[in-house]
Image 1 (cartoon, helix red, strand yellow):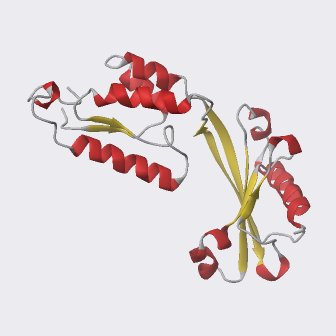
Image 2 (image 1 turned 90 degrees about the horizontal axis):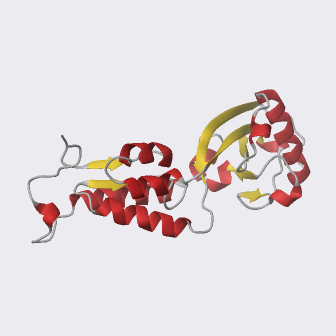
Length: 209
């Protein structure tokens, strides 16, 4: 028994949890597809890595590159530059929707491919002092045409269940600010008092029963 429940889980898991009570919402959630991805993070000596202006770059699929994006971390987040003033931290990412073959390669090969693309894009040919690969399997929700309507239907269904809300990257965006905003709104929904006369404002029907 619980006074309120916030489902802060990926869409497939939320679909399974809601299947019995909210089948329409569950069906919509089950349609949200995910992509896997990997991050290759490099640390270069600052004097050996003359990066171009800006905080990074994006690579369109038509370019045929392995890397789909790169972030110059010290420029995007000042605290990184302050913490490691002698280093340039560069984070690259690979893994587009339905691009599983690339992610099947081992860490060493992904690092080599990322360095090649980074060198082509920026001219940085220095050896990194450190490099690390981080993988997320099925961690990036996809937003095709119709996603906003799907999310609206899910939220309409969930709003009819007292003390229940959903939040996370599957709805409004994958970035940290979007996820925080989603969680804040979910908390507001479950804490908001029900208007007088609302059938869900009675003492029965708590989330989790």
